[in-house]
Each structure stands twice: as C-alpha cells, then as structure tokens.
Amino acid sequence: MSGQNQNQNGRKNRTKMILAVLAGLLVVVIGAAAFFVVSGKMKEKNYSEAMTRAEKYLASHNYEDAVVEYKKAISKNPGEEDAYLALADVYVEQEEPSKAKAVLRKGWEETSSFKIKRMLDDLDGQNLVAVMGDEEEKQEQTLDLKNASQNMGWDTSFMQKIINYRFEDYKDVFGSVKSAQTDEDGYLEVVHAGLDATCFYRNTETNKNIVDVSRKTPTEKGMPEKITVNTLGMLFRNFDGGVSIQRLQMFFGEKVQPKNLDGRYYVETKNEDYIIRIETDADGNVTAPNVWNEIILLNANLEKDRTGHLSGVVVDAVDGEGVEDAVLTFQPAKKSNPKKRPSQDQTEHFPLTLNRMSIPF
Image (cartoon, rainbow, N blue to C red):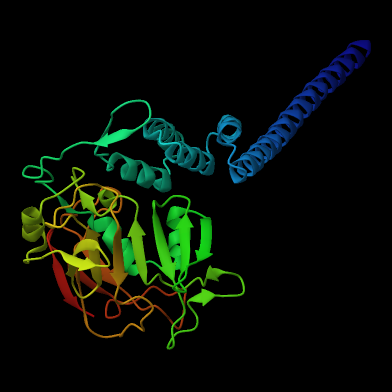
C-alpha cells in the first residue's frame, strides 16, 4: 500500500514539474513576443522621428544635419524605401551623384523597391558633359557629336507610363509629392520624390476635375498635360549626353529642323500621343543632357472610346526590353457575379510578337 502511495506521489511530482516547465516556457514565449512587438514599435518610432527631424533640417536648407538624420532613419529601419530616396535627393542637390548612387544601390539590395531602381537608373543615365576646370568653375567639355549616342533608343517603359499614368499612378510608383506650386501660366507643377521630372496639371474649359484648386493638388484621376524631365537620359537609352541633328533625324525618321522661339532653338517631333520638344544649338545639335525640354501629352484627360484598336510595344516594366511570346488577356471590367470566373466567351487571349502588336477591342 505504501508503495502505491509512493508511486502516486512520484507521478504527481513529475506532473507538477512538467507543468512548471511548461509554464516557464510559456512565460519565455510571451516575453519574447512582447519584446519583438515593443522592439518593432520602437524601431518604427525611431525611424519616424529621424525622418521628421531630417525633413525639418531640409526645409531650412541644413543639408549636413539632414544627411545625418536620414542615415539614422536607414539604420533604424533598413527595409523602408523613403529614407534612401530622400537621402539620394539630398546628395543630388549637393551635386554628389556618386554618393546618391551608392545610397540607392544599398537601398535596392535591402528593399528591392522599384522606386529606388527607377531613380538609380535615371542617375546612371545622366552622363554629365562637364569637367572641373579649377576649384571655382566648371568648363564645358567638347562633345564628339559625330559619334555620340549612336545606339540611342526610346526608353519605352518610361514613355508608356507618362502616356497612361494618372496622378494616383504617379504616387504609387514614384512616391509622395515633394513639391507643388502654381506657375504664371496657371499650371500646377508637381514633383514626386522618386521622379526626376516635373508634371504640369491644370483644369480646362471642358474638364474642371483635373486639379483640386482648394487643396492645391491634382485629383486622383487627373493626368498631367505636359512633363519636363531633368535629364534626357530618362527619355533615351544609351544617350551619351548629346546628339547631332543628323542622328536625331535618323532616330525620329523625319527631317527635323531647329526652330527659334524667343531666342531658344529647339527641335520637335510628334505622333498621335505626344509632342516632344528638345532644346538645341542653332544647328539643331543637342549638346547637354539637362537642356530645356517638354513632352506635351495630347490625349491626357480625354474620354477614352470603348471601341477601337490597341497598338504598341510589349516591354518589361523594369528593364524596358521587349517581352517575347507575350499574351494579352482581356476580360470584362464589371461582372454580375464577382465570384464567378469569366467564361471562355467573355475572355479573349491574343498572342503578341516581340516587336509590335495591333489587336481589336
């Protein structure tokens, strides 16, 4: 009898021990979870505070302290893209593109952000045509226009974006609005944090819903009437910082000649979607990557016809190269039963070639 009591007591003691161990483990797990939650909140808090301080320094043109705070923000939360983009912007303002590229490369490795990749590509496309003469001034380097930009081509991915993007798309892809101001012609000039260009919006007689005047911002569905880029490397791949009038004529497929307006020479090319004007010298040569330019978007904010033909080039959104063996799928925008998959007669599949497509819809 006493043996049975001892066995029962032993089992009770083991049970108590197991329960105690489990309770201890539960406390450890709860504590670890609480630590990670608190740590995550603190990381986000420290990141936000550093970004706020950096923006205040930037507003007062204190770039040195702004750089310090943006670096702190990156160290607190290296997975957030905004700090990399903002720090790169500061370096660009300080004319230190190599530092900007280094920051963006690190940001791309940490976040795989498309906005960071886009800005890095833009900077890589900027071939500054200048050399340091002495510590006080820069002297323009003579371009070899005969051989410059021989392999130049459209950045098709970028061109398709500006033809089709609305304000909501620009925010999604290129980030928040960095600045917005109304110019003397009544355009609202908008600059995004991740786009090295200016978008021009304004209401028209036929469309009053492009700009929210009271808030000084475009409406979500508003499209810019025109865009200017800060470097022609955004429009053209393999742009070497300049291009001759002969090469431009070959590239545009027409005999463009320089026009003169108020002392400014420029060449112009157009198609059904846009008019592009680029500043040149008196002979029609482009001699720098950051010359005056404007892209007038002819179909912006127009009501789209539901019938017609879709034509264009199928390209990769990241590298702008042609996509081979692509298939474009159409299906109804509205369905009576949203849970029901479209039937075969509702969906059309069109195989596309690498170069161009033209399909009815």
